[in-house]
Amino acid sequence: MRSAEYPRRVAMISMHTSPLETPGVGDAGGLNVYVAEVARRLGARGVEIDVFTRRTDPNTPDEVSPHENVRVIQLAAGPAKAMSKEDLPPLVNEFAARLDARTEDYDLIHSHYWLSGLAGLGLAARREIPLVHTMHTMARVKNASRADDHLVEPDVREEGEAAIVRAAEVLTANTPDEALELQEHYGAREEQLAIVPPGVDLDRFHPCNRSRTREQLGIDQDHQVIVFVGRIQPLKAPDVLIQAVGELVRRDPERRHRLRLMIIGSPSGPESSWADTLPGLVGSLGLDGIVEFRPHSPRDQLFRWYCASDVVGVPSYNESFGLVALEAQACGRPVVATDVGGLRHAVDDESTGLLVHGHDPERWADALSRILDDPELAVELGRNAATHAARFSWDNSAKATLDAYHSARLAVS
Image (tube, one colour):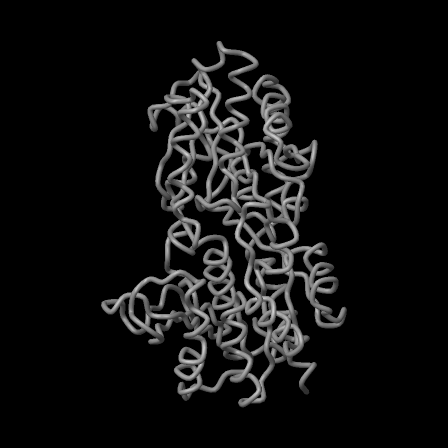
């Protein structure tokens, strides 16, 4: 039962991407999953959740109710078409005005990503209700960890995030490391911070029969299969896995007959054309027939690709958490991930997978081969991975979110 100390109605803002969108398409990703799952669990606890997002299709209904006590509401701001989030800052004020025109009474605003935070700032002040904000990613953190040839996050984003930190009653962070980053990069106060770990849908992602799944997908039982899942952009670094696979084949040319790298996802962001360089990289390394590109998959289908893999690679330059790593582990698959950000919490190094410092393809090849060439280690890591992932649930995330809401309400009482 919902205690009276918790809010009755919450306006949740996800301006730049709808929780109804398929992760891996455009700007849809882990944030979409986070908003959808937390909203669903809060609704099940009796909190009425209205998720406000920007209309990107003129034919989409004004309101959709995907779950009990949850509504996804489309607001007009700019043209009713898909736009990159980098092009949305000029539309924040229009979106905020549409939101402010709503007559519903809300007890609290929970904004996701900096564009939504800016839209919620004025509304929270005018209605004298608390603002809870979840960054998901931060400009100053991304700029500090980016590669030299990656785009720099703009000043307007850094300034917007700083304004949100100054105004929000509570800032939720996925991990203690992210909370520390909010303090170090933005001057967040310790009393503002609440740790809300993301969860994983354990009904959808769970240990599975690899042999049967490979038979269904037409994958050779003897192949060594590495899977990458994510948006195809420099930040996610699928090129690192391609180069690592090239190094594995260079070391052992016979491996090319059994090694496969499946890259599952679609181009995204202002550097979406970067994805066009990857087939050329594959060709230059002589990996045609070894590396396969597949578009984004619905989450039910994604489960099958995790199941078919020997190991899942997450070579991102930065992740606030890394839901892909958690989903893969929930399926009993070891993960090799970059030793950065939230991945340090999602993956238990040497227990559920391996963390790699940096993006040197040789180091990545070393880590991948440790798992691919040691079946006993792979089984042990996979077993530990499933146990580790089972500790994360969206119900726990919802409970931590409610506690953050309670703290925010106390801060303005």
